[in-house]
Amino acid sequence: MTVIYESRYPTHPDDVKKYDTEQLRQHFLVDNLMQADKLVLCYTHYERVIVGSAVPVQAAVKLETVEALKAEYFLQRRELGIINVGGSGTVAVDGTNYVLHNKEALYVGMGAKDVSFQSSDSATPAKFYLNSAPAHHSYPTKHLTMDKCTVLQMGSQATSNERAIHQLMINDVVETCQLQMGLTVLKPGSVWNTMPAHQHDRRMEAYFYFDLAAEQGVCHFMGQPQQTRHIWVANEQAVVSPAWSIHSGCGTSNYAFIWGMAGENLDYHDMDKFPASAMR
Image 1: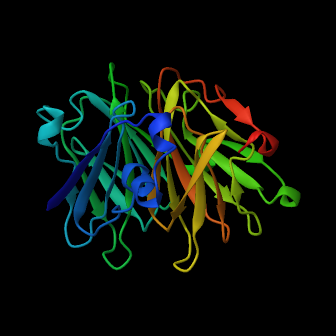
Image 2: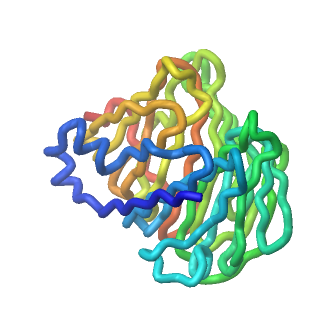
Image 3: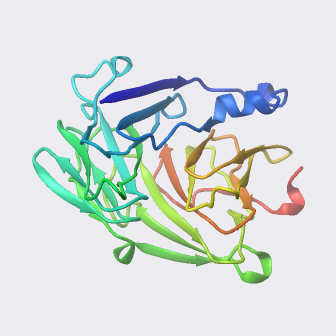
């Protein structure tokens, strides 16, 4: 099994004002996820969140630690959120198996030593998207499904942003230290996500776009509200969003995306909103 690891350092908003397209993509786009039989890990220095993936096809993929963590095992000082965006698969946590179907999630608390991923059918492999953050307490592992989470119906067809926000991993659904994750599905005919845009200076966020046809794309908006920038994103790619940045997107078709956050508090509604009229 191969582990693909990289580290991303923080950026200052004054510096980002000068970035060209390639620099923006280099610092904020994670475009190497979902590789067969590989564990992919991108360690960001924004709240030290790791964005990653595991796609078991020919064999199980194990959650291995990396030298940069200086840890005996991956979750020695971390918690983990997993959402499956592929076929059915199993996550084994210290000998207990959890079957995750498409769009189902698993929270794994600090201290779990042996975590591995397996697909039910190699022809339609599971695709496990991962977010991990530092933890200070060990909370129980919990299986989370779309029918048992909090769902917010947002937007409207008139503003092209009718969507369902599935809060799979927030503090009124599962206990975590700082990690929050959820899944947003846009209705057919809707293309805008997170509008009005917002930022939360107390948390970073990462967006992972999926269920997007190969010939389609999403224009992801980031930056300070008065200094916005954009990155074109393809299917199964992620964008890392610093706490000082807005995060919003507009697709050439409808799509779904996973949002993951970590930082100072667990208040999902702690955000500063910026209507389109305030954006530059």
